[in-house]
Structures are given as structure tokens and as C-alpha cells.
Image (cartoon, rainbow, N blue to C red; front, side, top):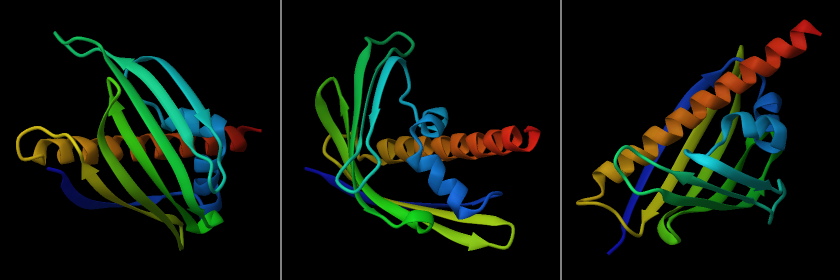
Length: 162
């Protein structure tokens, strides 16, 4: 039995939509905010419609056996500074745990960008009723967007110091 959920995260970023878009498109900037937890990470990124990203790492929690994490995405639609749509799969030890369709909308605000992240997820494997898995995924997405904001601020400071 699968479980379907949807969540949306909205947040203000203090940079124009073009800079936010670049943080998704530019692999060097993306590595500053998109990472899998764990060690020995490897990443491949092809930012174009039909391209995607593959990421792998080994995660070891407290008193747990190491897990092999894998993320595989494919870009479906890229609308420049307006946003993008992509799908991805999350695997643990070679088994599909969930797959998602993500829409990232970048709206102009007077003092930056309103980023709206909507994720439609299908859990293929989950614990109990799946509510903890959804909370884990949503929390991970919030942390990732915190990293995006930090990477954008760091890039902005670097540009201002030049």
C-alpha cells in the first residue's frame, strides 16, 4: 500500500528571482546547499529539461547500521527565473522509499523573491501510518531551503566584497 501526501513551503529570500534560479542551475552553488546527509557523497548534475541529478552517500546514525542513500531526479520543466518542475526518487540501501513531484515557483517581491515549494510525494515504504515519514521529508526540505538561503547570502556577500 502506498501513501500520498502534499506539502507547500513558502519563504521570502532577499535576492531577485534570477539569483535564486542560478542557485538551482549552477552546480558549484548548488553543492553549497543541496547535500545528502552522511559521508562519502558523490554528485552528478545536468541542469536541462530531461537532465537531472544523481547523489549518493553513506549515512550512519547513532547505534545504527550504515545506510546507502541515493537521490535520482529528472528536470521536467525549467522556466528560468519563474521556477522549475522536477521529479525525484529517494532510495535507501537500493530500495525505493518515496518518489516526488516538486514545483518550485519564484515570484518577484519588492525586496526579493517569494519561493513557493510544493511537493507531491508518494511513499512506497513507510513506518506506521507514514506521518513520521512525511514530517521527516518536510523537515528535510525546510533544512534544505535554509541552506539555499545561506548560500544565497554568502554569494551576495562575496559579490559585494569584490
